[in-house]
Length: 370
Ligand code: MG
Image 1: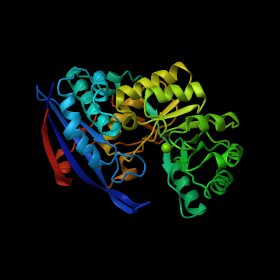
Image 2 (image 1 turned 60 degrees about the vertical axis):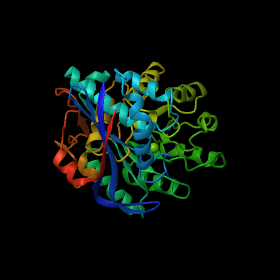
Image 3 (image 1 turned 30 degrees about the vertical axis):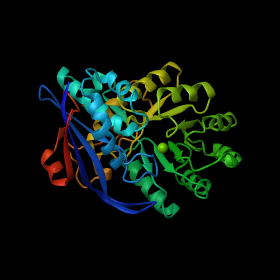
Image 4 (image 1 turned 180 degrees about the vertical axis):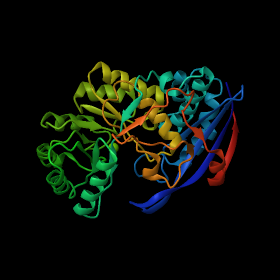
């Protein structure tokens, strides 16, 4: 039974600024949730919504509003984390990222109550998870090749390149030429193509990619199926998979052969686990995507990715890839051979929350009684 929820917005400085469509970003605005139950236990989570609705309709401001006005009151009397999403869905449509944030903090609470790691509570079986990296579109092939060399030396086990029309074949060609056929290479189009590009997309087969991620629009399952039919490269769906039902549609229609699971996109850990289980039953491999999370969101993702069918490397980069300094102790690290270790021996998230630092970074906070 919830007692209250503290919503906080922190501004976390990035290690290096990066270019996005609306300008150069030097900090990440992050919405954190601190959920207290009536026994005084505290669960933490992070909402993955961004500042601007360019990759999802939600933002941290819409999530704040949805949580305060609708979602927290609906979750007040829910006892089991497995039941949270259904309770929220009965009254509120959409707002998956806001729903997920609340649900994930309640999973953390449950793991503390049961004194086990979140990974084991979810049914995770792995002690370590392979890590891949996602690289944005670079100013030149030389810069990209330098970056890939560095990341390979750090141990990353999958290199994923962002591609878009006009920056795809030439980029993949340069990378294959520099690193040869054995580099584990994937490409992510973030829905930038249409069916008019079908022949062009099929021609990417020659680069032997591990997967081509989300080439077509989010709601285009049928067109993804037609594209996959004539393509050897497995299509991986990301933005399209917003629920277990969409995952089932993908499998039934043949719209893809791999799923990138992000708990924030599907309404939380229970839905993410259900998609994992469905995919396992059909022999569809999955991996855990990233959304520029701090160490708190990372902890939830690592716990989820310890489930057995997360067989492909996840976007679970160590803290220092993004942050000058993270908000958890210890910071997340990667082994020299490219794995993140799952902290299974500690109850909860497996890392300590750096509350002093969070308080210093907090721009606004609000306590909401459940
Ligand atoms: Mg993606």
